Length: 298
Image 1 (cartoon, helix red, strand yellow):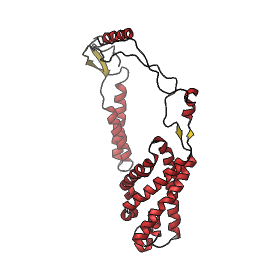
Image 2: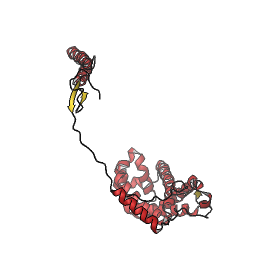
Image 3: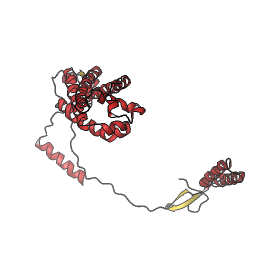
Image 4: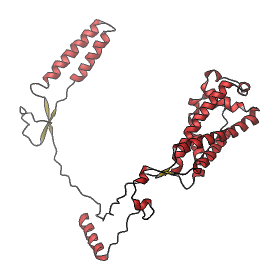
């Protein structure tokens, strides 16, 4: 915002000078667009675009030099009164301990990997029982999982999926193995956040969450799996995975994180709590604080 010395309103304190509006930038954009269009259509359109571009450049330049064009805008002066309804209270002393990052103890990465392997093996038991009961073949669930990676298997029959296929077994092993490892790592990082009910979290809450997520997105990931999956047995398989994985993970000892090592020695040794000290205020001091609160409100 500048004051134009050539404007009679420049000395008026109730008026401010703002840059004048201009349409030349839009005209220049139109001209450039027409020049580009003329390259693939007709030279006449390109010439028209060139004329508009040059005209907008000159017009825009004259609005800035030798003096920038401004317009006066009236200003209404309105007094502002700043007030607050907050009361003045005494603050508790800040703790020397750094801010906590929960959890201060967690599992090692290898713990999650072991839990994922154990849970993946346990998950194959309900899946195999489902295949044997409904299709009289252990390989149906294996091939159904592998079908998501083979486009040619999208329209495969139940008889085809019930047979043993080496390619399908290898694909299912890779898919199931990698998924189990990733979920095992997730369990290793997640369970320390719920230390009171780890088995309930791993065996019930997590399978419900994973089932809901997969149910909403399985149609995009694998259409054939979306058409033929049995959600009841899939949920049972997830519960088996969660219970075994959570049990294996909780068998291992947690390791201290860098946040725990940053705590004061008295807290790490159990000699001192990490709570704030209690502030005792006598009657006279309380009366003085009340007076300060009333003065602050006024």
